[in-house]
Length: 416
Image (cartoon, rainbow, N blue to C red; front, side, top):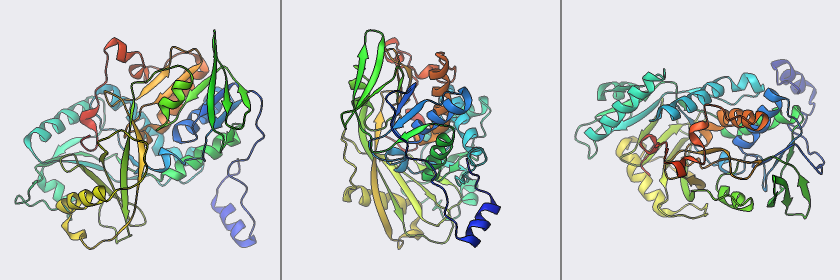
């Protein structure tokens, strides 16, 4: 893999030399050891760690669109590990650790910025939940604590902390390790590194069927009529997770909802951390370019629509101005929607399925991008060794039949 060094940047700048392709367009083979469906952060990370950690390089990543074109390119790029359950805290904290060192590992600037993550409490009930989460976080060794309104105002002076507001800020769960990252850079970095290790990335390659024999998976069928023979398929899709699983005859307890987001024109940097209000159903952060990025709760109906709505914009504006009145004249630049696969307990579904050789890394709801690196690392270990890593064992599909749910709804950034 060609390195992105200061010297290479200077040399190409002076000579006008072209950069090599980040990842190549490879000829499709008739068979692969592993086929990963979905070229988002989860699929690419799985392929990368299969090759890097386990030497499994005969891997194809197939996607009906392009690298990072699905949920990985439509999220708000926030990372954190201040979850509610011990299982969730341990899992996402490993992901945050991998994200911290990702730029060096991939030799790709993923623009990780440790800003701090602040979840506001507007009533006594929310404060109790913050205390609960803080104690779980601290027991797991995660930096997280409850702070009062004065500390909130000191960190974010542009927040309206007046007690006269309709929803006064009584405190917050403050999580200094949280922050933001550049989502497309994460996808490109993983794709480039996986390609360099021998992984084939096939964009515009739609899977329309999965062949299953008496001993398990035997191959995948593609929209162009071709077939790839393989005994191991990993479903790393978001939005279409159930569609792919249905092809293998696996039913998943997932309902898909749209989740909208929006971004403003760039303004002078003034927001230091990621600010979340579950009561007001909104979260906001500021990019390095100065844009304010807003998210909210999922739309209250199941759908595959990825269009923005005026209702979302109006509600978002009223809630944001409750928190930061001074940005009333800032103009909204654009809005969009992604798809979130929601499970009954708001935790993912990871691991083996009743169909031998068919693995799932799905059901991420609104947490998927945060978990990209650790999911790839752990799923790669499972696929390569056949042993389920301890870190993802709690998220097995079988938990729904066995009544072992991992309830993470209380740690959602906003109320869903």
